[in-house]
Length: 322
Image 1 (cartoon, rainbow, N blue to C red):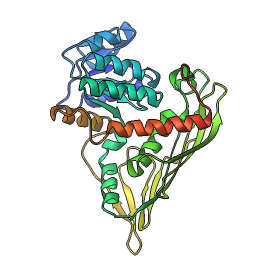
Image 2: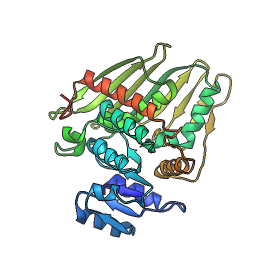
Image 3: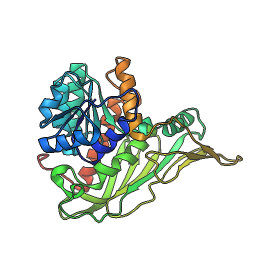
Image 4: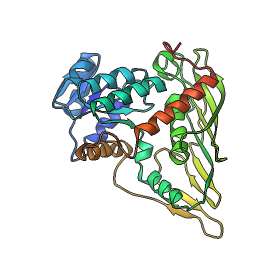
């Protein structure tokens, strides 16, 4: 595997990947040669490239993990796909659905593997929840509640407040509650959003109300100004499922059904969140698949459409969007 970018997320992913017996990191690329060299020395990576193009051109690399700020995902992931590499791209997939569609079209045209690094979808606890709901354990889903907020405060020059880097709570944190809700209910038929914008024009505290023609609803929130509970709940006509803090990479949930004691459900696979993403990529590549059934590209596009609709209602526009 090749690592594109050398920030904190790239470092965490690489550290976890190196503990997997069937994975190798053979190269890292950065816009700055000195940054790539330091990263390579830190993790014992044989090759350090001072440019994205050089990394993408390395024919010994099976797949490249893209960990740049999401404002660069379209350019970097596209470069890798054009060079014939499979790509695991950090969330949020891109700045907007237009860019996401371009990447998906490119991957499909080239027959190359592409997946958003949405670790929640690869989590065995979340997968077990989805199985139980599919089997009718809580009846028909009527409501989803989820939140993800960090306390900050973040200075104006922080990436989370920088419009040029796709800043704001919605794309960086809100993508998790939205993805969670759409895993269970699919793309909503109605999107409403309210929130507070920073002086720079990005959202810092946002609430979403999603609606489906079935009557189901989702009430979601995200913030870079408040430490929210980071919990989730799924309510059905015959019970509910509750996730404790950290619903986006959970260790357990509690199943509540009328007339029964609460049931704690766990699912252990011996892997950490980044490792689950990597394991799914490796499984898919060995199987000759170009898309993951756990993190399907059509699902990623649906989430991006919801995020676009929410940003439109909030009045958040990024440079170059018009």
